[in-house]
Length: 231
Image 1 (cartoon, rainbow, N blue to C red):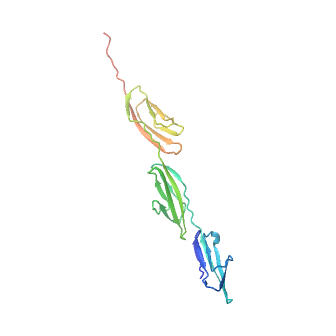
Image 2 (tube, rainbow, N blue to C red):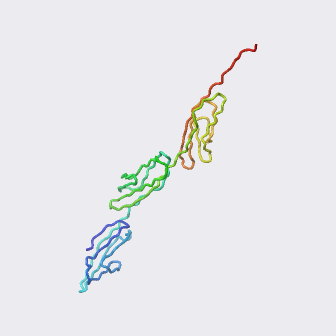
C-alpha cells in the first residue's frame, strides 16, 4: 500500500503498489509499468505526487496517490587553515539548529576550537544532522606551522668600547625583525654598544608566525691605570 514519505536528498526509496501477483497491470506517474516504483539518489526535483493505476485481468481498476517530500541536506562549510604552533583557530561549519559530531575529537559542539600543539597536518571532519534527520559532512585540514627559531646567544658581559653584534639569523627578504631597543630597523642584525636587555620579535612574512628571544648585554668600565709621574 502506498504511504506518504519524507526522505533526505540522495536517499533511495521504493513504493510498492500492494498488488504483486499475476493478472495485474500497473501504470505509475512516470509511465513505468512495474509493480513497484523506485527512486535512487533522490533530488529535490523528485518532491511531488507518486501515483499508480492498477488494472486486473478481470477488468477491475483503481488508483492511488501519495506525496513524496525530498528534504535538502544541511550544507556545512569548512575550509583548510594554517596556524602557528600553540595558536588557536575555531572551525565553524556555519549552521544553526543542527547537531554536530566532530572527528577525531568526538566533540558535539557546533564549533570546534583547535590548538596547534603538534606540527603538521590534521584532518577534522564534522557530521551535522538537522531536524529532519538529514546528515551531511565537511572537512578541514589544519596545518600547524613552526615559528622562527631565534637564538641571540647567552647573556654577555664585555668591556666598554666593544661592539656586540646580535644576529637573529633571518634576513628582511623572508622575515621582519623588530628590536625592543637600539634600532627601528627590521634588519636581522643589531650592533650593541650600551647596557641593556635586548629583545627581538622575528615574524615569518609567509606564515606570520613569530619567534622571539632576549639577551642581556653588560659593559664593564675600562680600568684607569695611573703609575704616577716619571722618576
